[in-house]
Length: 180
Image 1 (cartoon, rainbow, N blue to C red):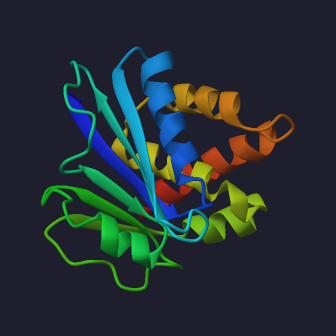
Image 2 (cartoon, rainbow, N blue to C red; image 1 turned 30 degrees about the vertical axis):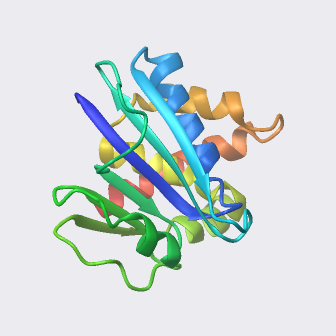
């Protein structure tokens, strides 16, 4: 991996910003790679479209914005429509099957996953959909070592939820393996 540009998107409150922070932390703090993370919310903070962008590179990052993402994750229809317009033709769009009924068209590859359903039913809490997303994304794209990602997740989650989040990360990895 020389450089990966990732955009995590959904609606405000789904935790995509936190997921971006965790991914950048795993890459930079725990693996010593160059990584930056930025974020943007729609005007409606909760419920409006939001995105987190992460660039992970082995070399210096001179421009901190994602220009043509290699990967876009969209947990809502609005996010899919709004945030994958500049996805590389050779890129990957990961969508949530429940919330994204019509994936945008393009030359990029599309993988539909039951992220929100997995969080709610297999893990037991819909609020960990962002961690399920990280487990799936990392399994598909191999961005950081899985143990590193787990360490970063556990360093950022509220005390007392470590086991829930560990389970969410594993559920996301299993979801991705089944889809590949």
